[in-house]
Length: 107
Image 1: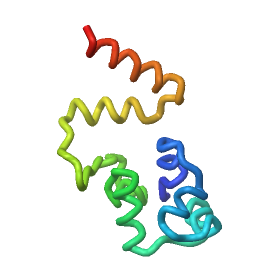
Image 2 (image 1 turned 120 degrees about the vertical axis):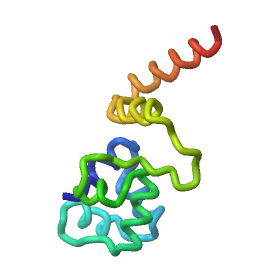
Image 3 (image 1 turned 135 degrees about the vertical axis):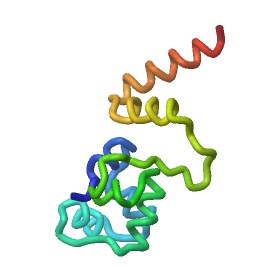
Image 4 (image 1 turned 45 degrees about the vertical axis):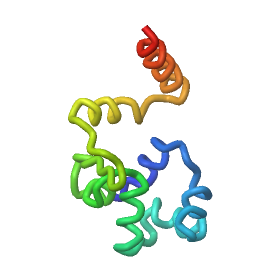
């Protein structure tokens, strides 16, 4: 099972926006999400980088997201746990959490 729908939801981005980002049609991306067609290996790698996960996680071969930060500093285990807990939160909860963190930093 490819986790496109789940990851796209976590990013809060539309099919149209992703299709534009990867220079494909929205119908093509929709077909990937619905399992009607599959992306190429090159496209899978690009999508894994976009979603900051491993290709194995993206295609459902692993339950470990293996958060990969290709062009970013490595995250600590604590930061990865925080990110994994933060990602599925609704937008309002994310905004409240970020405000709380900012307030705590200003103490």
